[in-house]
Image 1 (spheres, rainbow, N blue to C red):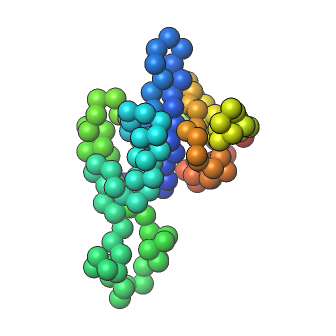
Image 2 (image 1 turned 180 degrees about the vertical axis):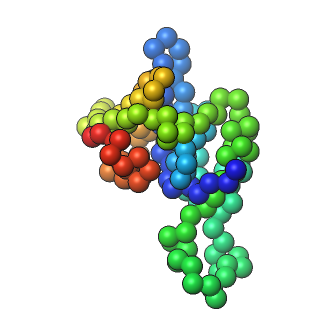
Length: 160
């Protein structure tokens, strides 16, 4: 099924007794997709790639140079978003997973302040009706931009 990509965030999932896992959270108009990355830096690169449709199963927005149709009355390219085939993305790696928005009860995001590196963006906790997932936002992302992307898709279920 093809869905529109709204945005993406690079995160590091906290695990108590095992190594943390890095993901790019790709937020579509219907669900949140977690794409496994080998490191937080790779998660950041994947998150940026997802925004322009350069991940498995994605279709980027065509520009005029690539044959985009300037004759139609569609919104400008900066407002059009790439689409993604969620099944292709989920099957690309066994560790990829999805969180449909209907299952998300609440998301809490907190600004972390400045750590030793001075670049820590914040924390994010996703509560579903069956589980709780805790993430650290990967450094070098703007906290307010991450909050804005989550607010677009979840509205009042986001707490700051």
